[in-house]
Image (tube, rainbow, N blue to C red):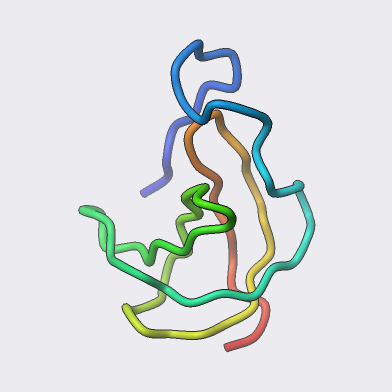
Length: 77
C-alpha cells in the first residue's frame, strides 16, 4: 500500500519540510501507523518507514515528500 500525497495542499506542515529527497537520516521508530508502517520524526515532521516496528533504531532514505509527511526506505537497521 502506498501513501498519497499532494505537495500543493494548503494544509500541513507550517514550513518547508526538514527532509530532502534522497537524503539519509537516522532515527527511531516512535509509533506504528494504521497501515502498519513505522513512524519516525525529523524535527517533528512525520516520516513513514515500511517494514519496521516500534523501537527500531535505523538509517532510512527519503523516497517521497509531501506537505504533511515523507516516506522512506530502510538503508541500514
